[in-house]
Structure formats: C-alpha cells, structure tokens
Amino acid sequence: MRRNLPSCLGLLIAVVWTAAGADTLLTNVNIVDIETGAVIEDQSVAIQDDLIGAVGTGLSTPAGAEIVNTAGRFLIPGLWDSHVHIFSTPNEPETALPLYLLHGITGIRDMGALWPLSEQMKLQDRLASGEVLGPRLILSGAWVDASPGSWPGMFLADTPEEARAAVKRISGEGWAAVKSYSMLDPSVYLALADEARTYDIPLVGHIPEQVTLGAAIVAGQNGMEHFGR
Image 1: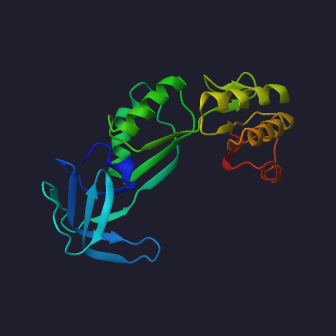
Image 2: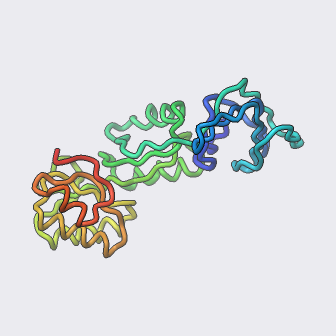
Image 3: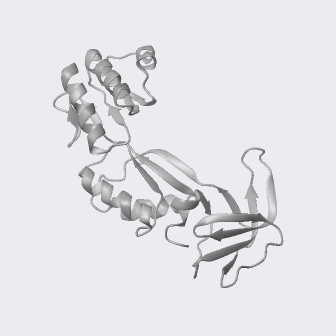
C-alpha cells in the first residue's frame, strides 16, 4: 500500500499492496455504491498522484503502473471513527493506527489525550505527509472541566471568565474543537459555549451533570458524546 494513500483518497480496500512508481491500477474490484446499496462488479480503478483518476471497465494501463488484481474484493468509502483516545500510553498509536486501516477506517477524531499537544501535532503531521501509515487525525481533545479536573492536562474553568480564557487559549493552540466535561457549573458551561461561537470553534464533548439536554441544544453544542460521566 502506498504509505499516504488512505489520507489522500478517503477510500480503502481490504487488501494490502505495494505500488511502485507514480500510478497504480486496481483491477477486478467490486465497488459498493453507498447511496443505492448496489455493488458494481468487476471494475478497475486508476490511481494517479494518490488520487482516483478513473473508475470503470476496460481502463488502459498507464506506462509503468503497478497493476493490482484485487481478486474481487470490495472498495468502499473510507470510514470514520469519531470518538477515539489513541494517546493514553506512549506506544498506543503504533498498535492502534494500523488496526484502523485494516478495518477500513481512514479518519479518526481523538477526543482526549495524555500526550502534550505538540507531540500529538507531530504525529498528525507525520500521518498527513505519509511518513507514518494511518488514518487522517483530527485533534478534538481540548477538554475543559471544573477543578481539580478528571484527567491530567485538562483546561480548568471554575468561573465564566476562566471558561472564556480557556476557549481563547484552545483556539490559539490550534485545536479542532472545545470539549466540555462533566463537572462544569451551568454558568461556566454557557460561557464556554458562547465563547466557542465567538471564536467559531465547535463545542463538543460531555453534557455536564448539572446541564440538561435542552439547555445544551439551546447553547449550540455541536457534538454530544456523553451525559455527565
């Protein structure tokens, strides 16, 4: 498999191959049309510069292309796992990232880590460049909770002012989202939601124990992962 293929294609086939040169031609592929549920049998897929250039029957073979007979395996859109924690131990990505690809997952959203953000971003860059084989990685684990916090490295906010300062810092550090956590006071949570709108950054995560579902909907929480704990 070309090392940066999954992140560029958004597609993954359940077979591993080695591609030499600039082009690859997959043959004898069964393509799953996820809009209709139909399976389009015996197709060829031409890949050029890590992008799908053509799909169909009777495609000509580009000079120097690597030809891969998939033996009737299936091609589907790459899957996403939108709630993962892959930074809980120093070596967890080494095991987790290849397993995602083997299960057709070409994108993941990490929702909270025990690694410093700088180290998370280094891995994110290595995945994007193809240096490391794995899915596209979105970093959404900037969790905000009341003191003393539930996990190391949390942003702590016990007042609305602290919540707004946390959002400003989260936005400046380059996180993809603000993650609310379980013990936030309602007034602090509402300030967090309001400031997230100001910085145009999604608010995701837990609905705090003292906040109702209706209040979270009105506040504009974009993604609701858990109630309370």
